[in-house]
Structure formats: C-alpha cells, structure tokens
Amino acid sequence: MSRLLDVQSVTGGYGAVTVLRGISIHMDKGENIGLFGPNGHGKSTLLRSISGLLRPVSGSHTFDGRDITRKRSSDIVGAGLVHAQQGNTLFGEMAVREILELSAFTRRARKGAVQALDHVLTLFPRLAERSRQKAKTLSGGERQMLSIGAALMCSPRLLMLDEPTLGLSPKLKEELSVALKDISRNVPLIVVEQDVELLLSVTDRLYLIEHGEVQREINKDNAPDHAEIMDMYFGAHGQ
Image (cartoon, rainbow, N blue to C red; front, side):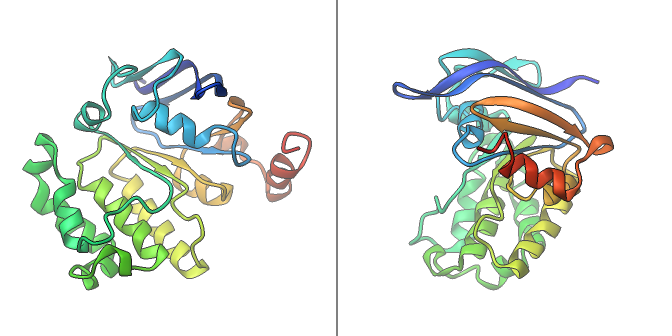
C-alpha cells in the first residue's frame, strides 16, 4: 500500500529547546492514525512541524509523494494537508457562517465550497443554529466544532486534529466523537487525543509518543486493555 504521509527522523523544537528527537511515523493511504502520550512530549509539536508552522532542524516530511519539509503553510494547505490546532484560534468578532465561508480560500476548496458548507452544517447542527452568531459567543465545544468545520472547508485530503475533545463536557464529547467517526469515513485523519479508547474507535493505528520519540506502535489487533492504557500514562513510561 502506498504512503500518504511519511515523516522520517525529524528533529526540532523551539529555540534551544529540542522537543522532537529523530521521530518517524508513517500513514498509508486508506487509513487513519492516532497519536497519544503524556502532555508536553511532542505530539502537538509534530503536527506543527508537518503543517509548516514549525521548521524542523533535520529530517523530512513527504505528503503523497511530495517533499513538503520546507514548504510554506499556505502551500501545504493548498496541497490538501490541513491542521486544526489545539485551542481557540478563531476570529471572535466574525460570525460562524463568515468563518466557514472564508475558510474555503484555496483554489481547490473554492470549487466545492457550497457543498462543503452544506456538509459542515449537516455534520454540526449546532453551527447551523448559530450561523449568525459571533464566534466569541459560542461555548467551548461549539468553538471546537467550528474549528473542525473551518478545516473541512479547506477541502482536506488529510486532516490533522489536535486534541479535539479537550475540555469538553461528556455530552459534547460524545457528539464530537460521532462526528469524527463520520469524517474519518471520507477524510484521512491524524488525531492527537488523550482518550485512547476514543482513538481506537476512530483510527486504525496508534503511536505512543514520549520524549519526542515513538515508544510504541499499536494496531487494533494488539490494542491494549484499559489497565494497560493506564499503565502507559502513569506507569514507568509516564514518569
């Protein structure tokens, strides 16, 4: 099976602080992958490196056969690799519908913008109900839905989501989990998430990342039970 994404021996970080230490992951066409592990160990930094927000010191990123290691973020989005970052990065004074419409800014996204908007508002009915509200008036869960919706408006060929359920109530987390499963049937996903059981329901393969390196690769065939998952976070590796 051919590779959709290939990250090879990437090192990088912030100034003098090295976060990624020769990390390598890959993603085949037709699969979804998840990244998990303790906070502060490189998961978000890896996504920022792949999407061009952070230049790696060494190593390479290849997307669908093309080297994107030194490409600008706008060019990477234009190629179809889209990153929905962790946290509230929306324009608070803009209305929900305005943000969604403006998110279809690439040439390939503009062609299907009308259909994409219909899909997003069907996927997230709360956004349809609040389409004229300013983003700053939305709840945390609704802002997360809007962030993912805006990413979908970019017509992704690969969508990277950084902790999409962080801080959500159980009810909103369940709503978003259902939406993620729906998205994963049509758009390949890389999902950073602390909830490993949720990851296993959405993705085909997981990477445990600690200290900027891959410590373990997990397939659904060798998925850990709940006790083993807890040990990964709080046992010897998590200290």
